[in-house]
Length: 190
Image 1 (cartoon, rainbow, N blue to C red):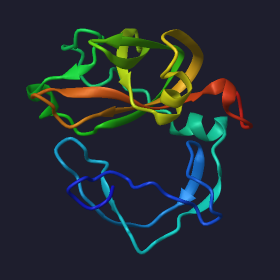
Image 2 (image 1 turned 60 degrees about the vertical axis):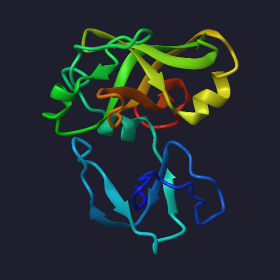
Image 3 (image 1 turned 180 degrees about the vertical axis):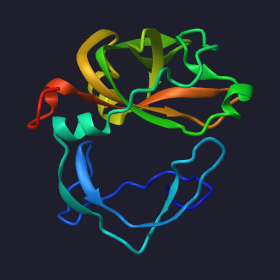
């Protein structure tokens, strides 16, 4: 993350001039841990380490090694009008120790629709026997599907699921990145 107040990761250009993309394996500089509430994974980026160096690209073998197997995506007691198991209450969030997970799901579809004049995108899938419909923030999938209302089947995929900071008291579960297995090259096919 960058320095407060935004904490977001700024757009990066790699040492070869290319834009950073999902699946790129890169060397970056980190200066110190900066956990915040349940977002224990946060690190402050070392601004002096630039540009970032691309070391390769992740394949299925690497993704399978990174895959996590949580029993659930945090707690499943709350939801929005359009989502399913997509919120975490303040009480539940206070006891959490992490805000990110990387999972594999057998099938995911994207539902793109309008709600009160605003386009929304939900990733719908099952994980560990539980149904989820979570907001998508992945810019690649917004660019590809954001203008196409309807349901889009993606098949087996790896998902980075993030727990956002509270808004109106509740923390939203978000699909921050989608990696369709069929689009990943090389490695084993676990």
